[in-house]
Length: 385
Image 1 (cartoon, rainbow, N blue to C red):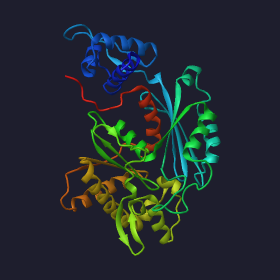
Image 2: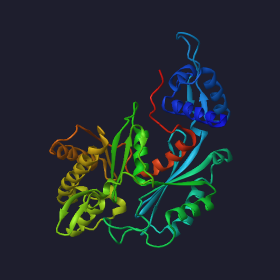
Image 3: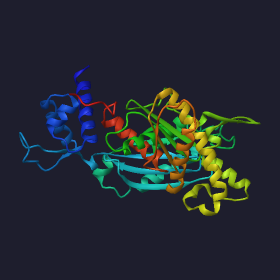
Image 4: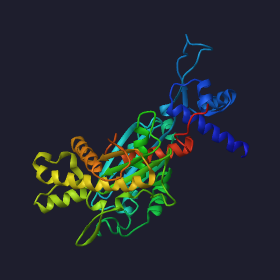
């Protein structure tokens, strides 16, 4: 490696150790990163001058020399995350601690990418318009999480879903970049949400898990051996397309059963109209005669998705999140556990509720650009002895 490349790799390693082990001393960072204490000291001086870290109060009364704890500086960097969904967009800004500092929501009838670029650019301008100059200078990236099929929805999604004309996602990203002056990166919405869940997990973070988000359709992601499985096109782990049932019309995907779109269809068949953009405020007790059987079918479909996925990736943890109220999510997690236990020849897995909910895709889309800019490629790299 050339010297500047090695230096950059070492800097990423140090920032990763600091970011995910806040409060360590110079010596502890050196031990965990495998770098020499002198190298770590020089890197800490550089990243401190760049405003990326801060030093805490000196810790005395311990063995050896007094130690100074090192922390990421929350104001050291900012990024914007956008989820472009089928009927809405969420736009948020985060700092280097992944804390949300601003949030906007936009509803629309169709994900028209041509119309969304100027709308989102205006929304972002309003959101950061009162930021001080230094804060705006530390904002460099926009991450966008969207379904891979949003531009031209095809089977197994509804043929009437998505934007069928206008720019491609790549052209849309280039347009938004030109309008905002910020670097724009596209991510699959399930992958972005999965990443947000990984960051939200308490230490020590799991090295592998299956992530499912019951939303308008079923978003999903996989963490394997400390890495996000994005695949060559960035849309790996499209678990919603997995076939889980057959009916007279042919095979059904998980999207067709384990999604809020499927629930809305059932409600409509029962003569009940609801606003899919406002699921938090539905009259859930009144909807229970439809919701209860949907939960059972949804859990059964998800159990098959987990079973088949786990046959390939050997993950011992499944994280299930939804855009629904927490009480409904908890019921779905419990029913998924029951249905999974009924399947034969299974590997043991733990099933847990997610930490974030409906903002997971936007939050992950904001976090990923910061990760790629400042941190190591392998988040869960084991500390050196």
